[in-house]
Image 1 (tube, protein in one colour):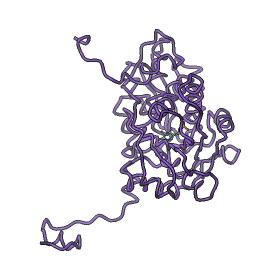
Image 2 (cartoon, helix red, strand yellow):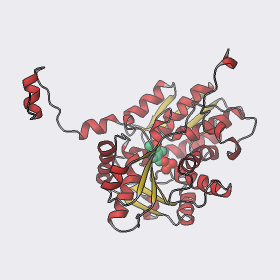
Image 3 (tube, protein in one colour):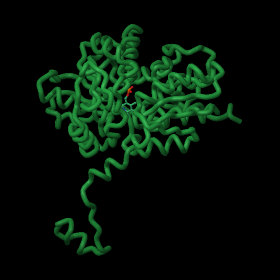
Image 4 (cartoon, helix red, strand yellow):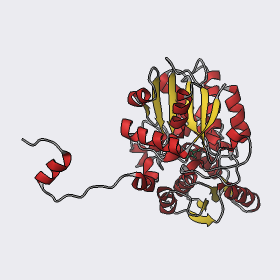
Length: 362
Ligand SMILES: *Cc1c(COP(=O)(O)O)cnc(C)c1O
């Protein structure tokens, strides 16, 4: 009998932070027990960036479908079910699709996802298909997909679960609460990748709300990083054909542009563009120095921090800094296999192995 089962010590982000989340009190959470992700101290990475400060990673790849999108999706699907929806729709560069598909499955809803054909990482497409979503490829980019699903949600009986849905941000802001709960206060800087700009908006909401609730003394400064080929906020204009290896942030016209700009201003933050080369360097440092394997977009915040330190744009001495790493590396295995060197094949023979390793045998 279900009532005899022990309660999970972690009930998911909606139940854990219920009083701080703007959802109808009688809405029953649709959850996969997302959230409560590790905040990992990374001293080797901090040293490689110059040292003299404390650095943590908020490892969001450890959410149930492998990205932070699950925090927002539990809230959005909870509300959709509460409001009587039978179908949900989203446009996605991959992770939103996989997350919507999983939570819709959990709730027994039909799920339609619109993705740019050939531009989403294999692990994300596989997730969406595995969870039983109806995947529709379009011969266009994410921004065109978003325009399409906006119209669909107005004219068809489907609920939109992209981050223009306010419940997504309600769920996503819980990551800020978790960081403060672990550190005892807000960090001095929070660094993260920026695509559609929902996450940076949600973090800011969360930090401000937690401070107002008396749980933190201050709020962090935000450091947002966009990919150089998809940097509309940095450039101050829409990018019609965004391009980057970091497919999760390949977005030219962010839906939460205005809110992100406001969060950056209020936090005395900074936003900058990082090249694909810089993103991939940071991505490699994360996995080889700290054992934290993320998808390329997730490394943009670290790349941005590294660049600002190098260029003397921020003073990190004695500071506490958190980089949000947004999605798991297994989402995009092809990029690893493409960028790794040749692998060796040996006879199954001890001498061959010892020779190859150039180690003296005893
Ligand atoms: C969605 C996503 C982002 C970008 O977040 P926005 O809210 O669109 O700015 C970054 N990294 C990963 C892995 C994502 O899935």
